[in-house]
Image (cartoon, rainbow, N blue to C red):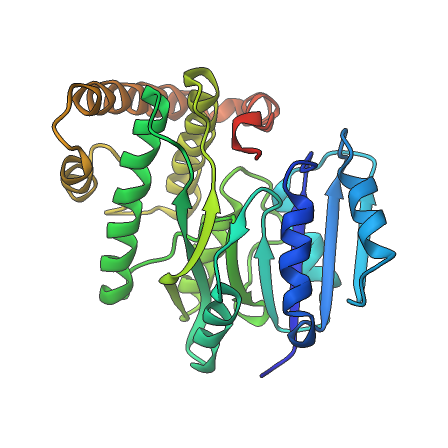
Length: 302
């Protein structure tokens, strides 16, 4: 197995970061380097990492930044500091399932593969409208991801858990937007390499259960969608696209016909369309929009 660097980009991850670090310890024999970029954390994240460093045998580069520059810049710093071509990226608020670590890197035995993304499993309880909306969205993403992987058109990496070959990435140096994961996938595919959705690479994650925080996350995703469309001139792009028939079909299949499901479908579709139209006409205000949307949602932390 070739050498691997594991990269963590963190902002206020005190609730979950130790869980991720303990998972890496299980696979320490296969990890050549761990790079941790703390993006001006304001909670106990840095102290938890420092305490863990005293007991870990892993080779760790811990970069603490005193100014928040965003995840795209943190990813760029990780790639710059990495001494290996193969790099795995993990968020600080997930929990990889079983042997997903091995499953993820096994895909890179094929030299034509430039990036692979994992499959999120929501831990939400479906108690609120936001919970239901989250399940509708992610089940549709999974179905589309599998179908597009088979057809060879997939590129949308999920930022919580993915891996890539550094030499496949060009054109990311100046990117500072909100869809860094999808942008990486788009660039890698543009350079002629495969980007895969791996249904056997699973990780637990949480989406906000409160409607306010749910909309905050969706605003960020919708802006990233508009940004990708502007920068990459994307065509026939079903991810986060409520006007795309393939997306709508998969969402309808995920809806169980209950009153809550129908309400979630109607509300979610209307909200996504309105947000998309709004950011389509405010794209020129990019700096102000980014400053507003870079504020993280606490509802994803667990």
